Length: 510
View 1: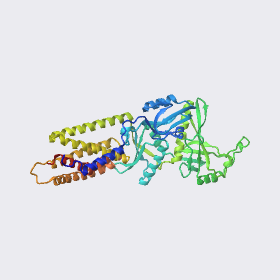
View 2 (view 1 turned 90 degrees about the horizontal axis):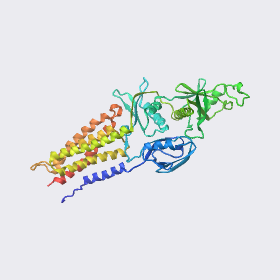
View 3 (view 1 turned 120 degrees about the horizontal axis):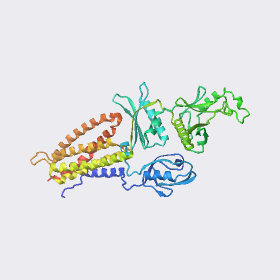
View 4 (view 1 turned 45 degrees about the vertical axis):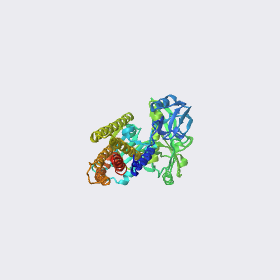
């Protein structure tokens, strides 16, 4: 070819494409499974979220189903449990069944939303007649983030939203969590109070409780399980540290409480009033206060409570659940107000996989349809190639930007990409028609391209303006469509459209 085909605009497109492919980091040969959530003693042994599990007790794992089956079949109490990951090998004596959820190993750096990965989406509304400020919503989101992260649910997204009337809402998306788990974690306000009589000694917050022992068998766990009538009762204990201010309140309140004389001589004496534990206004447990703590600024406290069930295993699990619940609320504090669940949706991972497959298929069909229409329109096969190159380039660049900014791709985001590519085809037709005008036209190549880009920029401005209201439409559920559409048309106007104009000019200029 006599003229240089790789112009500056084409080279810019190629450089951006290479950078975006690196950002996406495609790895179609990825195998194994990735840790999604982990807690308990296996977390203490070093298993981390994001680790790829390769085998359990020497048996290789290729998918989630194999992992779940091996966990059930290989776990035996007081037996050595060996988990090999891509980073380390963990071997320990198991005293509890590993609490781990996994997902297929990532084959790229793209984050996908619940529509594609499966999980639960909850729309929450503050249950109050007062006007909710932005600061209160921020505080609410902070507490929810802490609470859900404490439960090991790391693959989550919480953001503020609004309805059509401007009412403040909160949208929570959690991958890999069931509908019931999310409901139990969110619905309760989680107001913890420790009282002696009617006087509050401390509440569940970092201000009063700077340290809560969790996932450490030396200072937390199920201490006993006994048969009780027709069922079983288990008791948990965990240690907490009180702040100096809370310890001072404890000393002031206990100073005037008499010692229960009936306990003297029985091996231990206690104060006449117990320390009552309340959660959301309901009595959880009562702890006896040793006479040694009378008037003392005690900073170390042991919290205990019961769990029950028809069998010892059920009672054990119930006690463990109650302990985790109390620990979490003490660590994160209570919500600033109670919440109502406006809407809750669950999507299975299988359905999400079908969505991905269908989206990929629709994308291929759309590209094929455009190729056919373009060929019919211009009757020249060589004009089809720049169209295809630019469509694929725009998709790759948008996905690369999504990977760089950690934007979660969902169905509406994919729809936005398709919309952006569609507007790109329109712009490319405008460029092609201007460049390929018949002989005798008074405009030169540069002027023809300039006329085309005047139309393109006007359409770009109109598209961006139309997307802005979608940022908060549908409680923010349309935000992905707006973001990917704006990214797509911006990439097109400033990167791919100029490169396309250069390609067309070099292919057909005589």
